[in-house]
Structures are given as structure tokens and as C-alpha cells.
Image 1: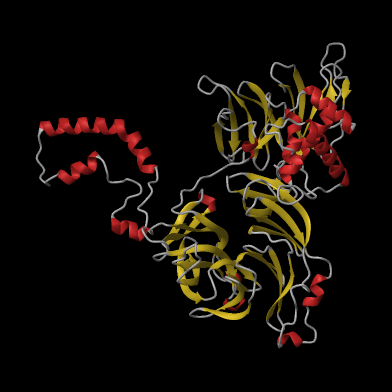
Image 2: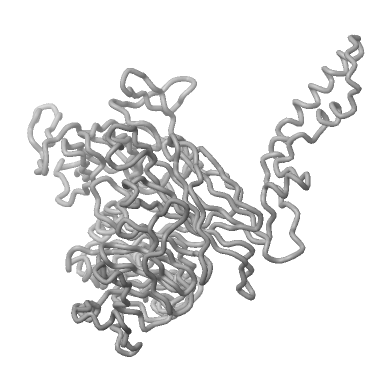
Length: 634
């Protein structure tokens, strides 16, 4: 409730609103939403269910806006307190993690971003001669004083919702996987379970670290400089004299002046010697601790000219369910023409949660190993044009069954239930079913459109999202009843397979969208605690994007109409038509261009009013709709 403090009308109710949960804390602030504009009265309420509500209050009548903006912040009740950032009003919200809420005067949007800091119990504004704009907070038994710098911290931009942590690697990362370190499944309750991150790295036309050390190459530049030269010229005799002491002091002063330059030079990576013949590779397997800033626990350098391309966490049921690391390697591979001397699948065990132990190496034929996945207590490997299922043995992996004759080369693999989803390097997706009774892999369906698959993500048992080399994202689905023919009731397929290519069911294309950059990876995840899952993708230039599913027909109609209006009203710096660009290789289908919808906030007020009139809505309603969709993701 909003009550009046005006003399003569003391405690008279001016406005009220209904909340979905009990309020935990409240804050009423004056905030400027535009540069040089008037201040708006913003009411922020923290609820017991871990969410917050933000709305505007009329400064004259005291009435509360009927369209509040809510957002889920964490599992703990939300504590709200006013603070100041960059000489402007802001709000500190504390739940399972701290959040900062503030208006952006440049764009007119109200941004809310998590603070990359430990969870706080209580907090309020703090000002002193040293810290002009700070926050004093308690966390457990400690009192902390913080300072949030808006300049250079991406506050008010799209990057403020992410916290990046850089890890220096030796080679180019090819793939990564999470691994639960510990013993067998039945002993993991007694042992401490530790989650580790494994990355495989490799570079073409590069010497390995062992060969570089033999050549005397030092990539960090350590051991070079005046001190090293002085040690090399030293004859080993110790004679005390005043002249030497004075010279040492001068050298120390000179060294202190050049320390910063030397550190920068030593931390800058230097390109090593280039091999004269093709087929040289440098590769390693790195074990990281994600709970300790992704610090390196162990790093194993592979053999000469051996390169690792894929890795997977696998649990063999015949070995007690212990989580092992499988790495696919190729030796002496050249790209054009495609040649290689050997291909292996290497198994490692994580010992004490900080060290990799080699179990055995299995040599494989039929092509390079580019994809591995855990499948029904066994290891499913994509080896060239062959899909092969392995069981673990004492000295090497044991071949159980295989499927030959895939189009070009297996690039990606995923498994769920009795189905395997195979991404081909040139011929799109293949759905494969494993028949346990006959111990066979059967092709269920394939895609009729040739797509050079780079990455894939399983959405459900019949739907998969893929990204290709031309910058397209597509969603493919298995037609209903298509896998009925894959069930061999008579057993005649045990002798021969009479299926033809034209008789194989084809996948349906549900969605198609041209990103404009090569999509190198995608995953289905939720970026906010308690939020709905979205399809997160990353591109070759480091861009992070998301495809958010709509849950109501109202949102579909609203964004379709908004996109249609902005196709003609939004500015075009390059003069290209947005729909033609998103349909560069194939027509856009069932995906709204979110980048185009975000252009609404960059239109002039007159342009926004024209678009709002076409949609039969107000400008405030459209801005709030865009903000709610963004908050549901971030």
C-alpha cells in the first residue's frame, strides 16, 4: 500500500496492488530513465518466494501502475535496499546471489544483472572519503565493503549478465566434457564426489611440447634478460666489494623499471617453429577444476603427431559404473588430401580427483575418430563412415556391433534411450535405433536436405536442433510412426537388410534460421534459477545467442506482428531486407528475429508511437513485453 505523509492527510491510502506472495522488503526511489528527463518514482518489492516486483508510482496521485514487472532471483527471500552507482540511483537485491537493478539513461531501458560476488545476507549504501559510492554488506560472520564500477564493467549493456573467466590453453580446444571423479557408483556415496572439466586441445602444423623443448624453444620467454645474462657470465667466485654492491643496486633499480615490460613480454605467447612437412600435430588432454576458477589440475601431452579431437564421459555397466574418460585420437592426419597413419580410442581414469591415469589404448580402423558418446552402458564411437559400439575389456575395448555405410563421416553423436542421433559431416542427420535382442544398429530416418553439421543438441526423443557450416540453425523432427519399420519382428533382417534409400523415412524441418556466423556449439539450458530452458548457441566469433520457446499463442501473434512492422520501419544501415537475410540459404521458418524486435527501443518516439498504433498497444506495453521476454532468459 502507498500511504500519504502530507500534513492534514497523514496515513491516507493513495494506492495499493495485490502480490502473488508475501512481501519481504520494499524500496521507493526516484530514478531518471532518460538523460535530462524527469525522475520517475520506482517501487521495488522483494517477495518471500525469491522473486521481485518493480512498478512505477504516480508522483501526484500516488497510484500504482497496473502492469508491474516481476523476475525470479533465487531460492531465498529477496532483500531490497537503495544504493547509488555512477551518481545515479540504483537498487541492490539480495537473494541466493546479489543483483543490481538500475535504469539505463542512454537506451531508456531498466536493466537488472547479477553481481559476480559471494551471496550476501544484508546490504545498504555506504559512503566515505575513500569510497564515494559503495555497499556495506554482511555475509555470514564477515562485514564487507564493496564498490561497483559502472564504467568498464558493461553495466547497462547486454554483456553485464555474463561473468567470464579466461583460462590459458596450450593449443586450440576441440571439445570438452564434465566428469564426476570417484569410484564406482555404489561407492560414490561414501567417497567425496568431485566434478571436473576435461578439455582436449590440438593444433595442426605445430610441434608438440616435447619436440619444442628438445629444440630449445621457450614460449614464455623465461630465463631471458639481464639477470640470465649476468648469471651466464658469472665465473662462480664470491668476492665482497663496495663497487659490486653499488652496481647491484643500480641493476635492481633498472630491473624494477623494466619489470612491467618484461612481464608483458613473458605472458605474451610466442609462435613456435613451423614444421616443414605436413601431418605435424601438437595436442594435449587437460583436467580443470570448475570450482576453483578452472585451474589446471593435470595436463597430459600426447605422442608425436597425435591429435585429440573428441572426448566423452562413459560408464561401463560391466565395470561397476565408474566414470571414465574416453578420448579419440588420430596420428599423422592431413586435411587435403585426407590421410592418417593410425587412429585410437584412449581410456583414462581420474585418480583422487586431480590426476589422469591411462588405462589402455585401442587401435581402430575405418577412419578417424571424431565423435564419442556414452550409450546404454557402453561406448558408441563414430569412426569415419562407421558407427561402432564398444564394451570395455581388460587390455582394450571389445567390439560389440557396428553399422557401416554412412554417407561421408560421423561428426557429432548423441544418445537417448535406444536411439542414437548421428550428425554427418556433409549429409545432415541420421536417426539410428539399437535393437538389443538382435544386437544391431538400424537406420530409422535421415534428412533429405544435405547439411554440413557442426554441432547438435537433442530437444526430445524425436526432435534435434543442428547448426551447419553456413551459419544456419535448424530444428528437425522424426515423423510420427516412422520408427515402426525399424522394429524387426520376423527376424529376416538378421540375414540381410533389404531397406532402400528411397524407403527410409525423412526428417521434417520444423524451424530454420540464418544466424550469419558458423555455430560452433549449442546446448539446452536455463540461465536463471527456476527459469524455462532455452537453446543457447555460440558462434565462431565468440557471440552467444539464445532461442527462447514461446509458451502461448498470444506471444507468437504479438512478436509476429511486431516483426512485420519493424521490417519496414526499422533503420537499415546496409540497406538489406531483414527477412531476405535470415532466409539466405533456406526460407526462415517458425522463428522470430529477436535482433529486429530489439530495434524498437532504438526508434524515435514518433516511430515507436506509429508502431504501437499499428499493434493497437501503447509504447510502454511493448517495451514491457520485450523486457519480460529478456528477463525470462537472463
